[in-house]
Length: 396
Image 1 (cartoon, rainbow, N blue to C red):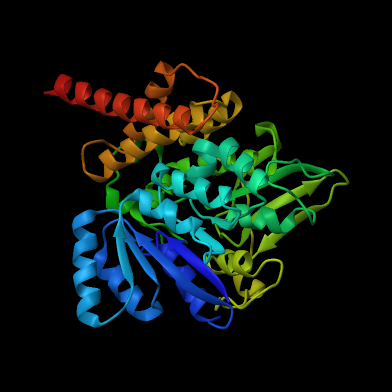
Image 2: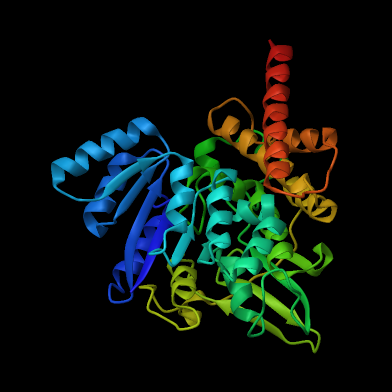
């Protein structure tokens, strides 16, 4: 049985991972569950899956969990802090790491898992966006396996030639067609988008996700980050990755070959499909997802994205071309802007505006190590917060 660490277990991807794992208890056992602060939900997961270790970033929440576990009579050990995450993924009993911590906070533990030679299931897209070159290099040196969990990148992985290596262009591939649902505001006039609320932005028409990633989907920044991710993971130039809006979310992405063939991966919009694929690879295991009924689906539509209404795509493509510290700055500014929007401090249209303003002030530098990335991340967060504070003061 393979020991698995699920980092970000209380989120939607983490919960779906545990659902798949529970269907294959003869193949996997849960070694570590980790979350930020939701000790109540993590307690329920510990009772159901009996991990050896539970980690919460928040110290107070970890104390609450420890007391509850002792009262329940479970032997699960509890630790807190990000250092505990790094130590956990290095444990010899952990063979598979689900990296599903949202944001740049997941980068150190993801790189640690790759450096330890684990099979890393990449649901934390920021690890590739912010520190992609470092992650791919660490995986190569340690012989780790990187398998993407994003439905789009997992689809691309499935359509790539056998033996494709992370960061290495596959022979015979002309381009990647990265599909996007278009989010909840696909048809909304640009003038109305400035007035949308956080709840409206989080009401995704196809996927059930956390609030931060739901907002990213509404701005199409999620697709911009995925464009950067695809370039890093599959060794492609930005010009070789095309975003295509596909509202039905049935074709999860496509790969075009030089002979004109286009391979696509289709399936119902359920994260358990890519999770099961990555867990079982190179075998196929049951996911619990219903079979796709193409007759009921009836039609598959595709269209080009409107980069005027969704400038996040334009920003992400320019950042992908620039490379260096620019992706880390884009990601950090986006995280700050989205958090401000969700808190009611910033309008929806202000999200890409803040990101672009931060990028305009950024002097792109080469990335040599993790500290370069973290420094760029800190600068961008401070700059974004400072800009919003100045704007708020000017508006009073």
